[in-house]
Amino acid sequence: MTSLALSRRYPQKRAFVTGAASGLGRALCHHLGADGWTVALADIDATGLQTTAEEVRRVGGHPHSVKLDVTDAPAFREAADAFVADAGGIDLVINNAGIGAGGAFADTSLEDWQRVLSVNLMGVVHGCRAFLPALRENGGHLMNVSSLAAAASGPYMAPYNVSKAGVQALSETLYGELREHDIHVCVLLPPFFATNIDENLRGSAAMQAMTQRLMERSGLNAETIARHALREAGRDRIHILYSDWTSRFVWYFRRAAPGRYVRTLPGRAEQVRSFVERRSASTG
Image (cartoon, rainbow, N blue to C red; front, side, top):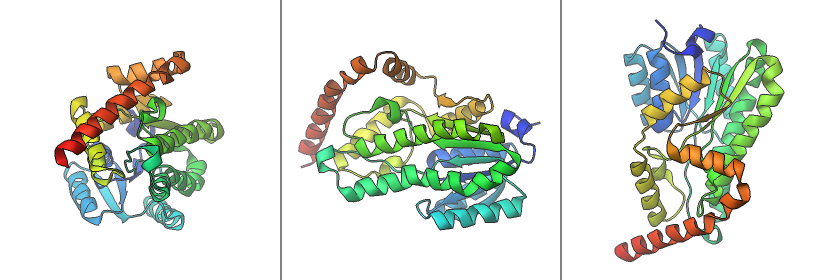
């Protein structure tokens, strides 16, 4: 018996998930596999892909591992074409691959800006472009993973915030353009949750420690976010927010009183500075 509304809508159950070797990507693949999906697991981490593939197979799914750097547009298109040809089509594309970034704007190098934008934003652009021809043929579902950071604009996270805000804007734009082709587009905006994104964080050790602390305090994990995302996607949500207090507060406060919300950010910046200074002093 299928448990996902997406499975009933797309009975051939063919999905492609980037960032599948760990964290949220792995959890999404696990839930899809448990519902009998054929899932292309795409990631640059070959070892992590093997682990995910074993888990997906164990729960009843049909994994196809694809070593892929999402910043490489030609490689992405080649991987997409190969999977579509092998599976006979595509039903669900999840552009999830991403890296973290933290630090003062003045101290953030252009190299870090370019790396974060190339993975977090352009990686999503490449995924949408690679699968668009196949999705236009028979319709399907496109889920792009952004972050609550897209709305929160938290201090000392400029490259990450900008990249995720871009993913949200792209997703909303595509929703308007692609609906006529029976392609549903949604954007996932999760809050902090326990994952390993801080391991590839672009920024200082102190910022990495702060990110880890926020993830631990959230009480959420990748499995919970993945389950919620797939359930809400099946309900045709455009913006998929988690139902925690932080997400609701940021999302609605930002929209109801944007100026007032932004005026709270200097205070949050001071809190971040104080934490980073204490952390740096204790480890210096």
